[in-house]
Image (cartoon, rainbow, N blue to C red; front, top):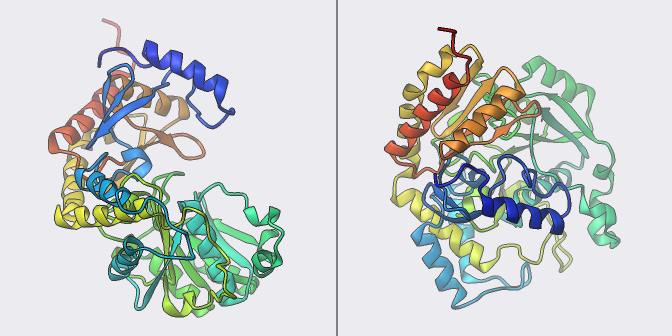
Length: 421
């Protein structure tokens, strides 16, 4: 570390951003942890003041194969030299074709079909629309806490009937919520009392909001309840897929076959792309009169598809699925002393997704700040802001991971008042 963050250049840049951007688009502008990333490689980030950090967020889970992976960069350069932009849903391109087939070969589904999306939130909207089209029922079963994106529902401002009509009813209040990990009896009761529910949207692990796992076997019970009531099961694996939890898809580990799987983040290796993987029968509910009912200008963008293909190849060829499992076991052993800290409520995780729950927002924020000063980027999450999430790139080295674990322990215990001599 060259300077204590925020450095002088970061402070000046934060002032300029504050003057140029709308409030809320950057939550740390002008704050004590303001920082501007200038360069990144592997698991490391360099800010504009020359400080070098270990990224324990993997860029919100995007950089699973590491920042600026050489194969991803090369693939993007090659694609840019041939086709920089396509025509969305009208004319496809080779990279899109290859990626569709590759995702289909990986999906834990019987006869998978792919529907590309522009972002994770867009993928969730596609999944909800698919559930409505297939089931004919507008109700949605969701769980709390949960994070599936922040789109308001652009259809509310879209005028063309062909786009709006099939989905008008879901724009009203049709969401029914239960606690994540709710008892099977609660789920069964709700589905029986609310026959309008046609889609169930669930995270296999509560990601951004808590980094918390449901009870063992819960997802399988939920899947069985959905089948019994003919409810489309849409699993949001945007954060958990592609090795983060030690599997290509966490649905595999849970032993379930969802109707729909949302994926994104790590898929593009740093470029924006997402997708919904669905069973053939369910996806066949999307009928067209010559124009796609859900699309976007940059959907299945050639550069993003090329990056995604390179990312999936890197995950497989470099053994990052197995590596994630191995490194997770190492981290678990290394952070065992944290459980003895009086301010630590829980340390939970698997592979390279971990949540450290503190006894208050202030303690969690201070721990995050102390880590930043040690050159570690780790963010707090959850509605209460009490969970510190650890989700480094899958290529993080043993030395880097050990340093992160040791720094966590030192920072946590170092925050405690020392007894008087």
